[in-house]
Amino acid sequence: MLRENSHIRHIKGEPKRRWFSDDFFDLVVWIDERDEISGFQLSYDRSHNQRALTWHTESGFTHDRIDDGEGKPGKMKATPILIPDSYFNYTEVGRRFKKHGTHIEKRISAFVYKKIMQYRFVKHGSES
Image 1 (tube, one colour):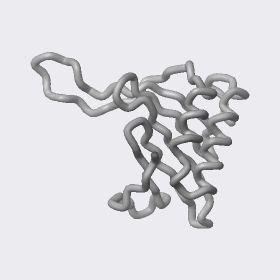
Image 2 (cartoon, rainbow, N blue to C red; image 1 turned 90 degrees about the horizontal axis):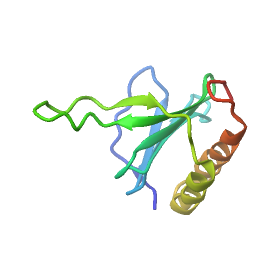
Image 3 (tube, rainbow, N blue to C red; image 1 turned 90 degrees about the vertical axis):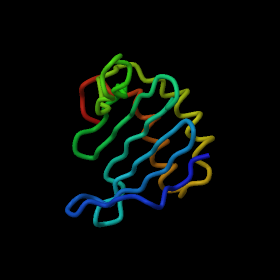
Image 4 (cartoon, rainbow, N blue to C red; image 1 turned 45 degrees about the vertical axis):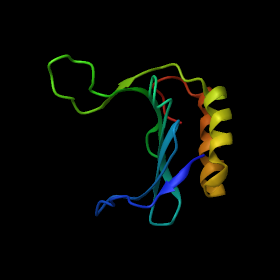
């Protein structure tokens, strides 16, 4: 079940962030000065093939695979980066998120779930 992490660094000049996590998901939610959700990043399948669905009011959706920077023998771990990944199984991720999100604030879980399900209407590379 997703739980809120209370120790999160806030960066001056940037929207407030809230961070929730469990063994499958990481969810960062950006809150604007009106206390409205202005964006989120939902990372999922953390232990196998981690990917991230990101949504912002201004830029819409992106879906990426997370390259964790591991896997280069003899080299130090690199900084994780996002690599575009077009396939997003919104039905499966939505189902799991609904189950894992029962312990977080209802307005946040409902908003993120609604956006996950709206992804099916997005043309890849377009705003929504």
